[in-house]
Length: 140
Ligand code: ZN
Image (cartoon, rainbow, N blue to C red; front, side, top):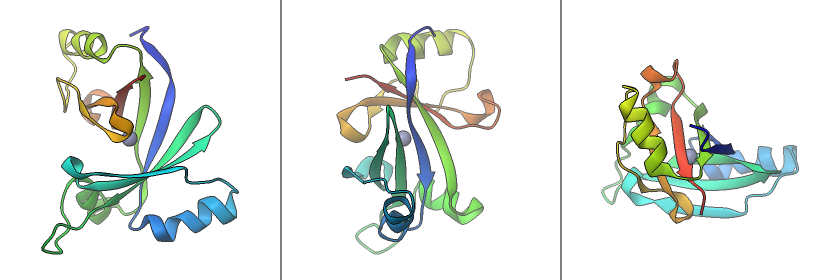
């Protein structure tokens, strides 16, 4: 895994980006530069650059019938707001996944899927990462 180039972002689960942004913008003087809905994951994300890495606020999206479900909604229900995942940038996500699968590590995704910014991403199971949900995102 010499493939990893930096921490791309730290994902923070929030109930509401609209409410959380005041702390990051007024409190810390940072700016949200990009907001995007990732429908297939049932979330809206807001990116906050912090030098060469970012913070990613992740809020659950309501479905058309008003119900809220999905991994972030369940995370918030169980544990409340807080750090949800760490995303590492990789040069070649296929190579990284092949190495991890060959190494016998538990994966949530064995093949990349489409994440925010149109990047190819994959999640590792926290059981293989000592309790941390790790996302890999390919540099684009
Ligand atoms: Zn992320």
